[in-house]
Length: 276
Image 1 (cartoon, rainbow, N blue to C red):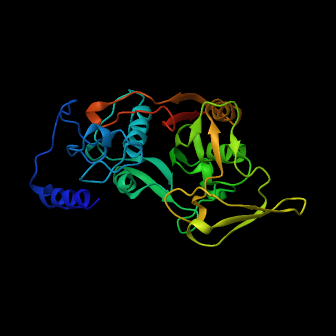
Image 2: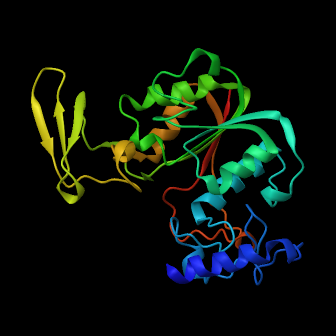
Image 3: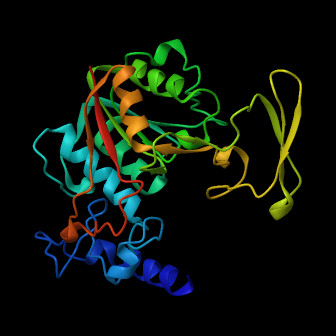
């Protein structure tokens, strides 16, 4: 980790003097977010959550999410360096707790707002504010919906409601190819987290008044609302997307080795869908 941060510091120091790499190749992969050469080995590039760009700190998930957005937004299937595309402020987008690695570039290129659950600008996807409805050309929701309590169909329906007709949803969630979505806490109703660290406990009072206590909780990247509540079933997710008004649902599993997008696993790949 120290070496990664040291390399990143050195790259930032030469940024203004380095020539951009115009043509990425499999031998010289380039980060499709910032445009700088990826020097990490393939074992690092292909790890979904490992920061593998020494310049911007992108991960495979970040690069794949941006690639899915780019390839579908213009409809030509092309992936480009996000930091180098022309500005298109006529396109309005919203992110759901997007990483700053790519959020600040989206903000430069589009009329884009990054929203959060606990701080401004706020978006509660369980009940989005009226002024957000039908306003966006695209939404990016990367590894968020597994933390949203309540029926999964409600959150998906509200995502559809945020989009203009024909608007694009770019979505990643943990999923498997099992038959049904696995709800870790199927009777979740009135709950809280008690304790600290590995001793944290989920205390839930069910709708009919029973108290439940769960340990061995799974948190993603921190505390607060990052508790994993479910693992989606891919087929169940696709079915629900269709039911709430999405079409052209696509799984983006192709590799782009020239952009450092190499999938060793077929779980958690980006999904795109259009608002019907």
